[in-house]
Image (cartoon, rainbow, N blue to C red):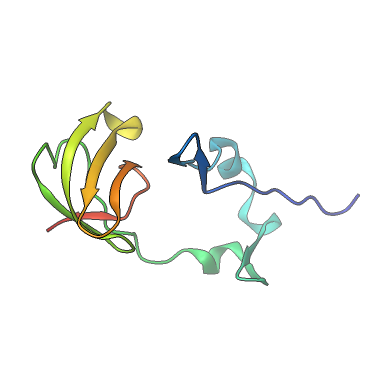
Length: 112
C-alpha cells in the first residue's frame, strides 16, 4: 500500500466521435515531490514531463470558414464552432482525413 497508480484516458472514441478529456483538477493538488509520470514505457519525474506548450487556438480566434492545421490530420476548414471557453468544440473538415469534431482546449490546432 505504498504506491498508487492513477491513469486517465487522454482521448476516447465514443459513438464515432473523438472526445478529448482534460486531466482531473484534483491531480494538481498532489505535491509534485510525491508523483512520478509514466512516459512511453519509462518512468520519469513529473517535473521532466513538462515541455513546450502545444499550439492551439481558442473559440475566440477561429470561426466558420477559417483554415486550420492539425499536427496529425493536416490542413482543414472549420465548419462550425460549438460552445465556449474550455468546452468549445470545432467541427473541422480535414482535406485528407474527413470531418472531425475536436475540443479546442486540447486539439493541437493552429491557424493556417
